[in-house]
Image (cartoon, rainbow, N blue to C red; front, side):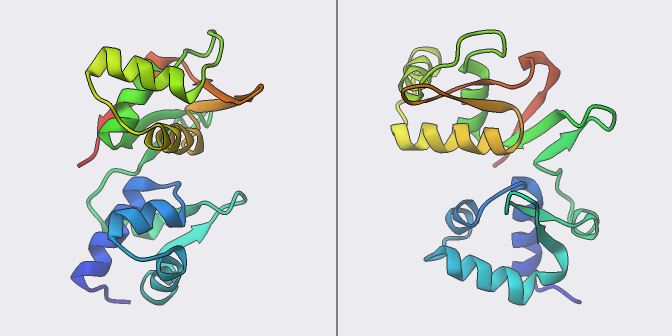
Length: 166
């Protein structure tokens, strides 16, 4: 299957963002809805992606070989724990400030306040929540359900190499 330039670029996005959801790809690709993402995946990239047990979108090994992009998550072969992640800048900032694995988990608002103090940025709370959930899907943040969902690292901060994607 020969890929168009657009399909190759979108495949690179999928490799970089994996594991991902329709909504993340929709935002990255500027599409109108999740069904449009699904239709594109099926028609153009059907041989290069699959959905895992949690219905998250992942690239096949062949897709990883086709594009010159680092996967979004590189797992340690022995432990299965991520040793490297490639994420957008906000996710990298969130990773650097969210409570550690031995600390008490914290709310989205708490993480937002830390971002304001540490980086002088003021993202929307929903963007912080989305970043935390994306990091959860990558296996480096866990959710602790209390009165509201709270978050903390699932791994030691220095055990994961974080690089920022464009």
